[in-house]
Image (cartoon, rainbow, N blue to C red):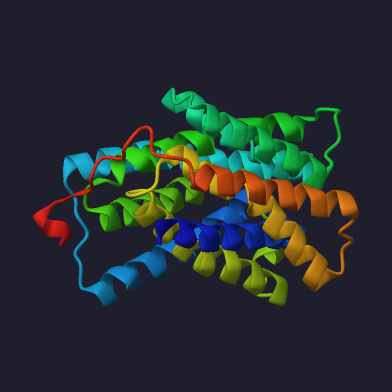
Length: 289
């Protein structure tokens, strides 16, 4: 069940990619990210209210949330700003390098994990066909991949103890607080915040749907090892390509279909891999029950 939930989460991540690329034509990246996480914060508080749960303020929860938020902030900012200096295909491929970074950060070197990661990268190369000339955007996106890998590692550790709901909500709040002052560095034009259909669509997908997907990820990582999560997330560019083909009429050639198939094989191999390193059992505090 958690792995199926992560597959759905990855589908939503794939949908946010073309949505963000389109919205950046109207609004600067940091301003868009602020609006996205502000809406996400409001949605997360609505979730707490519906579940009748209180937000925890203890030092451990705040510290863990702050550490995870640093990596989340760096990942989103580097990726979103990098999109302005590189192609969407290059950005998608370089971001997916967290498939390799996660097991490296964790020191998990099981052969099946590396076989799955290698197949996923080969499939991504066939699907996306990125250019081999590195740009500033590619370098920024490489930093984004490392930051997202560190965030995935944090979620594996921190979401299994204490109150995962508060851990999730605090990350949304801290992201909004950090992005509010930083967005003014861009000096956004007044028209950037005009309530257009494009902006509404982008914020619905990224602010509402992606917030729900992030909540599912926090829950699922209490049960699924981080390296397997990263592997499942390698389907994100494939989802994005399929959606662009279906809704936008973009071409999907034989090479793209082959790449998608290889990624699926890699995910299946990773999903059926035996648990060499057992996940620790989640520990619920009384406040989280």
